[in-house]
Length: 335
Ligand code: XIL
Image (cartoon, rainbow, N blue to C red; front, top):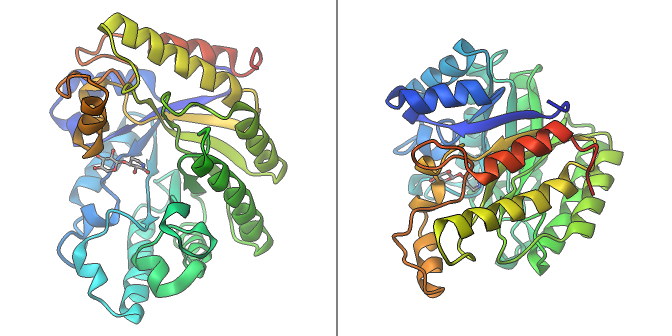
């Protein structure tokens, strides 16, 4: 459709929820493992990894003819406590092992890897605005290049992605991450590492809004570098919207439409991945801040999230229509 490939995040629910598994198979061309190949999920108690769930999920995708995508190979967040008790040299060794085992295991089958996830988080005050965590502490900024080189060696065929959050935001954080991401892309390309795609998460926050001109400009700058672009984690926070379900769905759909017009105006954007298809699996439910944000706005924190494309009963919502219309236009008619 319009040359833009569509997919979704998925997890173990596909083994117990046949209706949702069928929906994924019907709607998607690509499936991102939501959590199963992340460090903390593979190695919660120590170095030895348990790949049983990841293996089953990759098999599920392949069996349905969908491209499996690995998420957050290296991320300075969601790491187990035991890692921070190791020396810097030990952390380096575990870092290499994690990449070699994980990428190596799925070589030739995992179509794409988010090699480094969320490299930046300037509010933490680290040099260069980098996200703090054990990888940065042990290796400094060079962990990023090291991860790409190692991943490329472990699987020379996979599409390698640098993935980042906040880049569409009309905020100081958004502006800072946008400019840093372009610089980092240049540095990696100049260093000669294999970097195929810049992934932009797209967890939209209508309460902050999209910096349309600046976001479009960043997409254009990245495209000029010759990398492909992907929206890797699309969904829409609904905390800004009070009122009944119809009103919330309308507002979510409008915010999505507004964003996609800018994103799809750039031909280098070739892939869009929803961070799940249905409100049934909205990750916002599991976060610490979602219910609190609703409460602060005087909205019932137990309200059903309307953050995704199909409702909890798997009925299409306005957001699904907006998305499918945008995919059909494929950017031709965009802002
Ligand atoms: C989230 C998952 O959806 C949750 O199930 C998990 O508890 C935490 O991670 N940005 C990312 C994703 O890069 O990996 C995150 O996924 C959502 C935010």
